[in-house]
Image 1 (tube, rainbow, N blue to C red):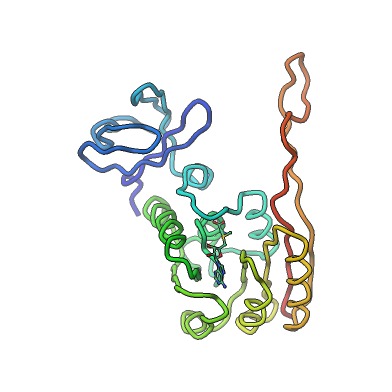
Image 2: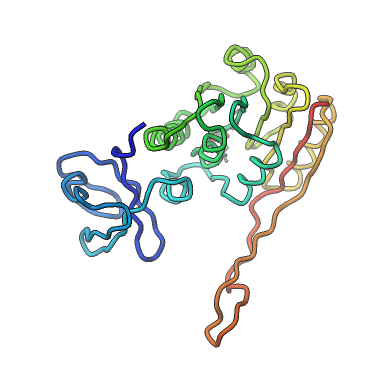
Length: 261
Ligand SMILES: C[S@@+](CC[C@H](N)C(=O)[O-])C[C@H]1O[C@@H](n2cnc3c(N)ncnc32)[C@H](O)[C@@H]1O
């Protein structure tokens, strides 16, 4: 893998741009018109560069930067929930992981990073316009990370794709579903889960959580944990000390983890 193909540039505000190092003048959204290769030639990691009116610092293409600077279309799963899935499902090198839908690949980037060079990652997505964005984000990661799993993508609805999924790998150590309707998917892929493997669902609303719980039980899986994670950021107060920063205390989704015993 080469880390020369893409550059990560961060604005002082924290906004991240992931720029392909092509030669010749191109227009890059948020940065304007410039020649990436010529402009960034000789700019090392940690150095700053001025592009148009913006001063940017070059950083290495690590997971947080690629996630912040990723192309977006469908709503993404962020580090808070992705980190929980990776830890609670025990995802690591050598595992086989099944994921649907890929959407913008927000979660996929975390899974690929945890799998490293020896895992198998199968993604499923029926909407081509979503898959295009998600697969492009994975392509960037593959070209800049030293290790990347064996990735397979299946086009279609997961509940209609079990033959293709099993042809890639007979069973999976972990399955993660971020779908509008989990029950048909759970019924279809529960048999693809290895014994001791875990299936997780990302459910923005409670009706989805309840439906996923019931579908897991009907499919013979044991629900291990369901709930939500709350994240509260703290910062420095203007008169000294630390306190929670002002801003919305948001909701992402309810999460469910079930195991095949
Ligand atoms: C919210 S997005 C997933 C976002 C993704 N987890 C991320 O972090 O970027 C949900 C995706 O599921 C896809 N989808 C909907 N029904 C599906 C099905 N039956 N099988 C597979 N994917 C499906 C949608 O097209 C959409 O791209």
